[in-house]
Amino acid sequence: MLARRWGWLLSLFLMLVACTTGSKSSLTCDDLAQFQTQISREFTSQEEFIQWIIEIQAVSAEEIDIFDLPSTPTASYVWSKGGYRYSAELENHFLNEISISRDGSGGFQAHTLISCFGPPQVYRAIYDIDLHVSGGSLTFEMIFTEAGVIADGTRFYRNVPRVIPPIIDEDFTMDHLLIMHPGSAVEILRKAYGSRAQQTFQWMHPWPKNWADIKVDITPAMKQYMQRQ
Image 1 (cartoon, one colour):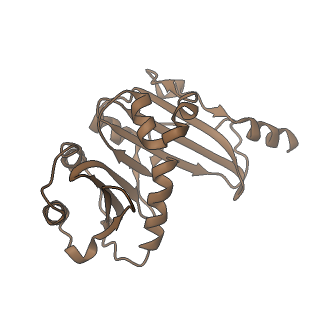
Image 2 (cartoon, helix red, strand yellow; image 1 turned 90 degrees about the horizontal axis):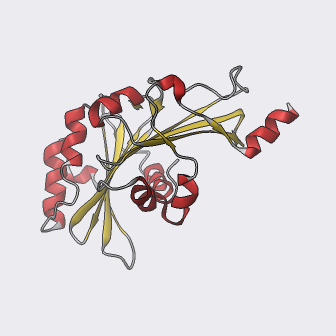
Image 3 (cartoon, one colour; image 1 turned 90 degrees about the vertical axis):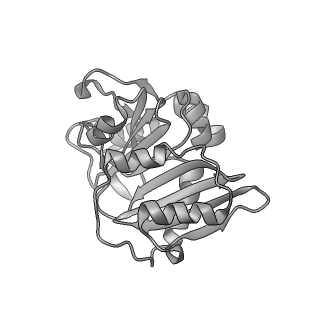
């Protein structure tokens, strides 16, 4: 999962669980592009930004929650629509990033995102121990440096899978998208993970030509757990 900002945003989402999400719908490449093209746009006021959300998302102003970060020029705007939860960050009136998280079932299939943004430059796939499930968790993350997009998803296993490590294919469901300024993989990771960016980058691999060539790394903790089984 994306650490620094994802953790904070997910906390906000839990606060909004009572909000009406409406019927579920699929996001298209055009839907994602309309967010992507607005990164770095300057809005003259909070009211202008809220009106922009209302126009492109067809939600009411009452459905948009505003969270000001103390002692910073940053504010986050959070809303739900069509089975997805959104959070947009505005800093000094400039749109810095937009996150999109699936609400319940649904999500983004990996191959769909590649059709929207092209192949990612790097990825990481990690099979790790998880305290909540005996079979562990498989996390898959793709970084599209030219698009300024991070996508990640996690699959949980009740039992240790027969195939170790588990296989990742083009239908892997991604739970979150983070859309920000384009940049190098390290720059994008630094924005998303802060001080943990370098540590996270060590797990990254160049994007392969074939899905079958994706390398899944097993963490030391999971290796020890599997040896005890």
